[in-house]
Image (cartoon, rainbow, N blue to C red; front, side, top):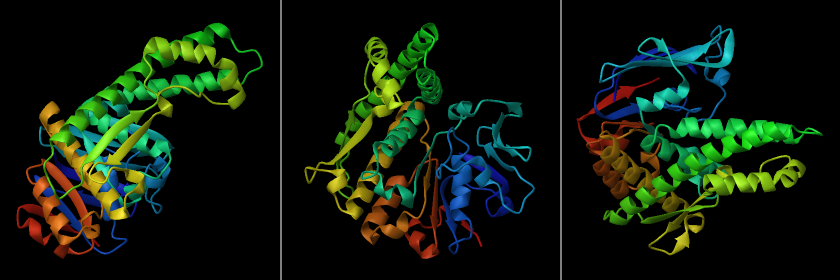
Length: 347
């Protein structure tokens, strides 16, 4: 867990130091106080672009000279930090115990998962949103997934660019496709393992307060040989389309509401929220079993959209987690949690 968090020029926070304890970390305050900005800062202590998927230059406080910093001291005495310099606002800098590191290395130290109001439409959004959600789930179980994904995507971008040339270098094209096949198969396998393990965990859930969800991975599950053959056979088609039409970047996470026997996309808004919570809670428990420590959970304005019974059920399920950061405009939303929490008022 995080025992000390320091923000410098992050969104509306010029400087902010927080000393969160274990368990619940409750951030309250009026709209615009910067509660979600704190969660975004924590999310940037993991690989990726954070819970808003914003450009790095947008994270920096507008009134600052440029650049921002996020530093955290973990309970195992590890210090991690990330941010940008004013001279390079879109270049991310990562340091672990003072030494420069790649952003993907953060996955070895922290597992972070989040739910935000923007994710309420996850089941009706394009497939890319669900892939990103699945990749975040997978990353918590397999830290190497971030590296495999980035290498696959880099090779794919280079291949797409090469195919756009009138006379592409065939040897270089073959080399890029070999890289895509190698890393793409690893991405597909890690996702499939996550879906299978999470499905088993969901099947074992007996909590009647949250609907049962069934998961399935659709497309993008080729092994290395099959993907390599498909890439080579599809060069002309992909050149005409201007993009690669086969591979794990085309996969989709399918979710069904088991109790109603309908796709999650056809469930009510409240049911979709509950399905999403059921998946995240089951995943956090699975990560705890696999890695010996549950991920840090960031739940932005979740309590406000639940009825009192389901809110109490959520708090009960979250009790015992290493650290759960939650936001809300009113402290009363968290009254059922009791005194065993870090309560921080912003604004």
